[in-house]
Image (tube, rainbow, N blue to C red; front, top):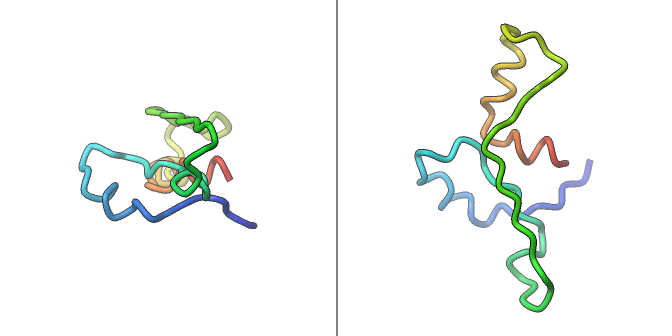
Length: 72
């Protein structure tokens, strides 16, 4: 699978204690200054196909890269 996101700000994101999920940033977002940009902020993630007490699902949702994995 090919991923199209930028990880260059991850060190800064890791300094933010309140940040549960690492944001997905498009691979050309920071480099392209002339194109319009879209920012989507999600503060909740749900796995609808899993049981509520399913430990595998809970660990999957706790992963800081969940947003990136979900989008890809």
